Length: 130
Image (cartoon, rainbow, N blue to C red):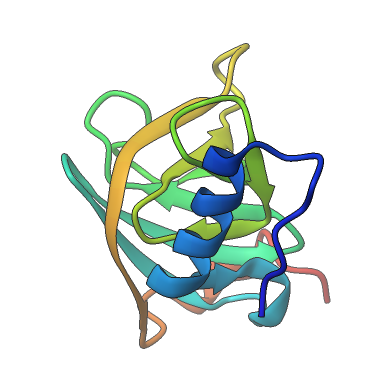
C-alpha cells in the first residue's frame, strides 16, 4: 500500500495512488518476447518486449507504422514526472525513438493486454540475446 510522501505535492501523491488503483505493467516483471497490446485514446500499439526497457513498437501511422526498436522510458501523467519502466492505465506511454531527439508521448492509455506471441521467431531472434 502506498504511503503519501511528505515532500511530494498532494497532486503527485494522488496520481501515484491512482496508478496503483488503475493498474498497469511493470516491464521488469515480464519475459523478453512478451507481446503487449496498448490501447490509447488515439491508437492501438503493439509492443514486443526485448528485455530491460527495450521493445519493438508499432501502431502509430507517423512514428511507428512498422515495428521500431525503442527504449520504453515509462509512463507519465501528462507532465514531466515519469514512473519508470511502467506502463499504466490512465497514463501516457513515453518511449525513445531512434529517429527523434525528444521522447514520443502517447495519448492516455485506456487498456493494456498481454497477447499470445504474434511475432515470428526470425524477427525476434535478431533482437533477443542468445
